[in-house]
Amino acid sequence: MFFISTRKLRYSSYLTRRRLSGQLGYRFRLGATNGHSQFVPQKMLGFHLLFLLPALLFIANVSAQGNQNAIKVPVGLSLLLKAKGEGVQVYGCVNGSWILQAPAADLLDEQRRVIGRHYGGPTWQLNDGSLVEGAVVSKQVSPEPTSIPWLLIKSVRGTGELEAVQFIQRSETHGGIAPSGNCSQATTVQVPYTAMYSFYGRAR
Image 1: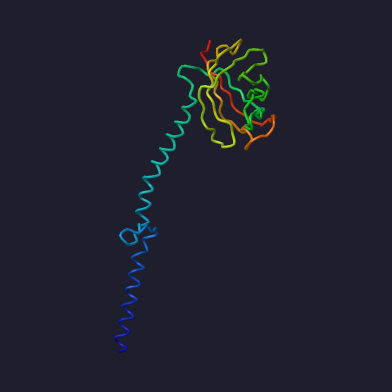
Image 2: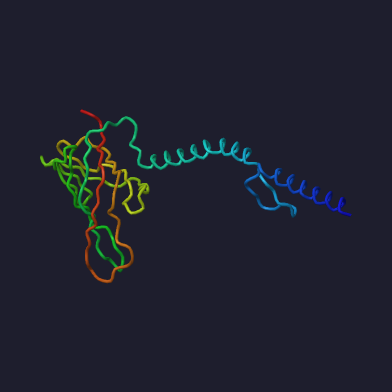
């Protein structure tokens, strides 16, 4: 009896080791199919991920390019001027909702010198008096949820140095979105923002 019990014990221990060793290469358990659990070998899962990762990155890149196309400047135009806008977006309370009234910002060059201003219209005016007014053609959501959208704006009137401008691109926005919630009285708020304005046209 002792001999038989010992053999059974050894055989049971052997089966246990076999089960454990058989599962050493299986780290990830999938949902059950036909009542049986499925395990995916770690090496096989890594092999699939190796091929899936480039595909996912490609899809993300295509999506980003698609967003950029929303404010893409027509082919054949040159960059005439680039300035950073620093100021506020002015919102007014109309029928219980915040509505954009106008921007009010300085235009800065690379040395952060004020070269003009940006105000309602929308209008961009340089210190020498030349200006350009525009109308929004298209927009795309800013990468920052708390920032105003990026825009492509077509010139409707220009004078002086800015007469050659045909399109203005607003990008790299930070801040400026309307306050959340409803408003209950006729009032205005000024929300700080910055943006990059690129002016495109045909070089003279």
